Every structure is written in C-alpha cells, then in structure tokens.
Image 1 (cartoon, helix red, strand yellow):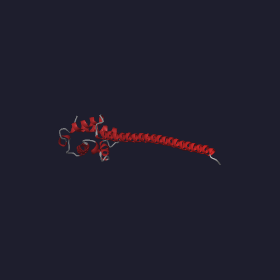
Image 2 (tube, rainbow, N blue to C red):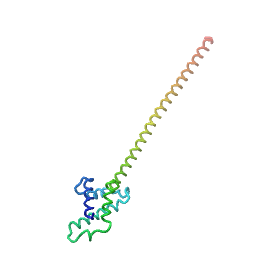
Image 3 (cartoon, rainbow, N blue to C red):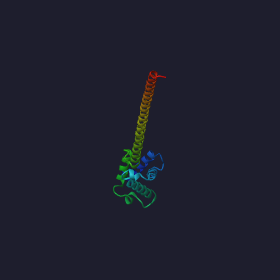
Image 4 (tube, rainbow, N blue to C red):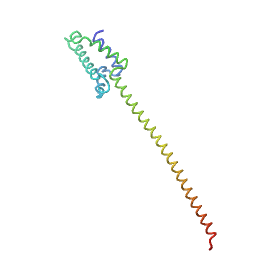
Amino acid sequence: MGFIDSYKRLEKLCGEIMQDERKISAYIEEMISKPNGSNKVPGWDEDLKKLKHYRWVRNKIAHEPDCTEKNMCEPGDEQWLDEFYSRIINQKDPLALYQKSETSVTAHHQSHKKNKKRISKRKRKLYKTLIIIALCILAIVIAFVVYVCDYYKADEDAISAFLPA
C-alpha cells in the first residue's frame, strides 16, 4: 500500500472515532491527556511515541520538497500503521484499552459500594432484631417484677389477716 496510503487510512479512521477533524493529532492529544495511561495500558508510551513520529514523517513528506517515502521511511513503518489500524478496529488500541480499564475499575468500585450497602442493610436488620429482643427481655423482666411484687403483697395481706390488730 505505501506509507502515505497507510497513514491516510489510519488518519481517516482516527477522525471518525475521535469525531475530530484533527484526526491522528486528536488521538495523540487524547492519549497525552491521560497521564496515567502508561500505568494502565502496556505499550502506551511506545504507541504514543510512534504516532508522534509518523505524524512528523507524514508532515515532512507532505511539506518538504526533498522528503519522500523512500528517504524518510524505514522498513516496517507501513506495517506498524496497518497493525495500529487493525488494533483500533478490534478495540485493542491504547485508548480503547484505557477505557476498558477505567470501566472495570468503576465497576469494581460500584460493586464494592453495593456490598457496603448490602452489609449496611444487614447491620440495620440485626440492630432492629436486637432492639426487639432487648425490649422483649425488658418486658419479661418487668412482668416478673410486677408478679413478684404482687405475690409478696398478697402474702403480706394474707399474713396480716391472721395477725391480731
């Protein structure tokens, strides 16, 4: 295909996915705006460096009279552009992988929050149950105390009936 043709094909795809007329430059800027991308996506820095380099090569070929594909390109440059194009199509490119890592982290946090809420609900139910049990025990104790007091009062009345006045 040739370097320029591969670059144009990648540039068109980047413009479409980024919805930006700056195309590859928009893709590069999006990568730069994610400072922790290299921590989340293997090969992030290498891909960013290659994209910047190939943009520079393309600009040289397009704007400098003595620059051509023949004297500016290395063997494998065209292949890298084609493979990067395929990675974007298959959502294996740096920005897609970054988005997936962010989504999985968010999902993990949401799952953790749900678990905390579930535990909170269990704790509230447990507290309610304990309060009900405590109130029942208190009611039993109060009933027992009232019964005992009535019993002794009845005994006292019975005894005083037999005693002379």
